[in-house]
Image 1 (tube, helix red, strand yellow):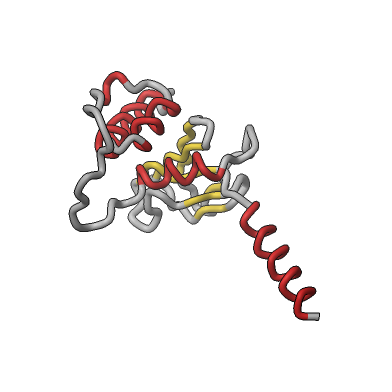
Image 2: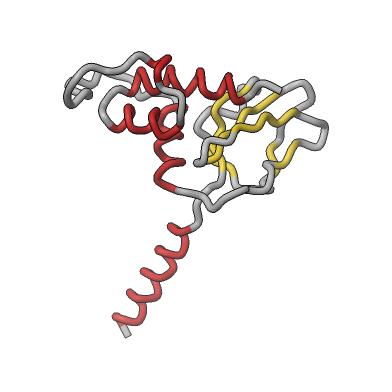
Length: 148
């Protein structure tokens, strides 16, 4: 009986972990919608008229949602979500923790953010310990992708 209950709890836990968000908020003009917020495809977001939210998928596609009286819905996902990539993107755009971290860079010299032009390059630099350069490169990437 005990093994059955533990198995059921484990199955439920793994089932919930498999559910991954499709987008992460990378910019927002609405103070109630913070960068780093995860959204599922089709999820409604209370975003007032005149406000905008820029979202990004794990694949690197960028979309800007414009507020309306009834809010807005995140677009349908184009590809299956990648929880690890989305978590890495989220850590770049979510407010940085307060305090100092020492020894974040593991080795070498951090590259110039201007040389990082793909999401893969940005995430590789981030995982190499150059979070500040990765953040700057991601901001430039989003700005370039977000142009009409």
